[in-house]
Length: 84
Image (cartoon, rainbow, N blue to C red; front, side, top):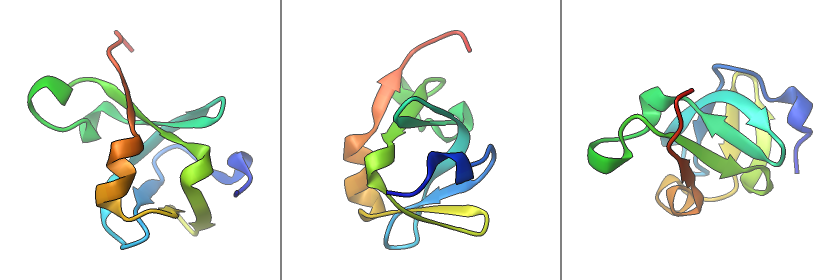
């Protein structure tokens, strides 16, 4: 697993397949909090989503590459409805 300290705000999170999964808001504990802008449509809109740090394969420049393809990675996302 990559050092969480190397993950910075506004980095792009991509799956192992290179497909955009989200944008880093910040790291909270053992999870990456994604910006609400990437929260999706419908019932998912306006919620923060979280990716477990255990899915991070490496940090490449301004990108966080996950060990799973994007379609699999989103199944690991946690959702939180909050006012922030």
